[in-house]
Length: 119
Image (cartoon, rainbow, N blue to C red; front, top):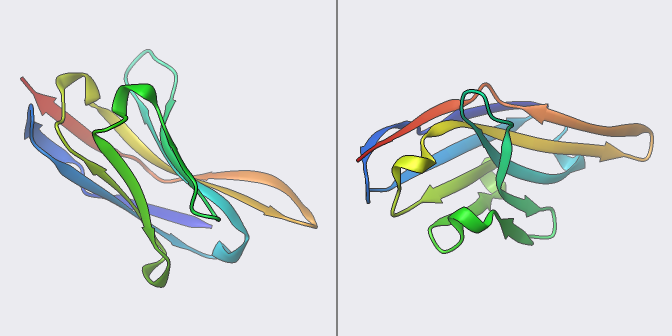
């Protein structure tokens, strides 16, 4: 499985960005896709997740502001980020969890995309 993110950038507080993550490879066996973020010196944290069945969950800090969605025809997961705050500044990573009857659960990661929110 390969994941390629795009859409990061520099915005001002209150503005919006949309991140995209295109998946390729054995995507049929993906059980969920997620967005994580990481800042220097801190652990990577879950921002939002969408399962194969379409269920979603969010970190408390982004509820009501961020929306995760997917376009199965394009093999793409999106993260719409509205009302951005300086504390949302981080490198955002796309994650996919892969599982089959014959292989262990495996995490795949994209290369990351920088989001910077200025005050």
